[in-house]
Length: 145
Ligand code: RTP
Ligand code: MG
Image (cartoon, protein in one colour):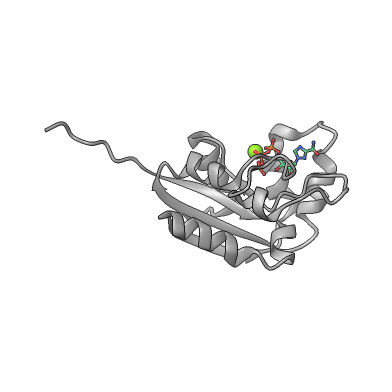
């Protein structure tokens, strides 16, 4: 019988300050666990400007960059590493489209997010977008993993 390649991967999830402020940390973790992914690390913390600058380096210079960094510094963040087969695209799918107005019902952003008329899209969660991003971001937020 052919071997079935099981490639367990890890992703970095952030419940952003809007999600923590609204008391949705548990709801996000619930959806991740209900989907069948495993929590590897969970930590409520204040982000540092240095970590955020590295995390969002690809967006430096864009009009939403500074409002985004300021927003990410506006309150606690729940930093999470989750593990499972296909968890990187899988969590992106759970999260839904970046713009919470466009995100489909059934997704975290579609069910729980909306336009608040603010300078930056407050869309509750972040999830790594590729294996390379996941490795980089996990190293940044959880250097001991
Ligand atoms: P994330 O990185 O947070 O998982 O979200 P994403 O991949 O869906 O979106 P990305 O393009 O990486 O953008 C990062 C975050 O920047 C904010 N953003 N605001 N036009 C805007 O106002 C705008 N575009 C992006 C959002 O908070 C987005 O999640
Ligand atoms: Mg992104």
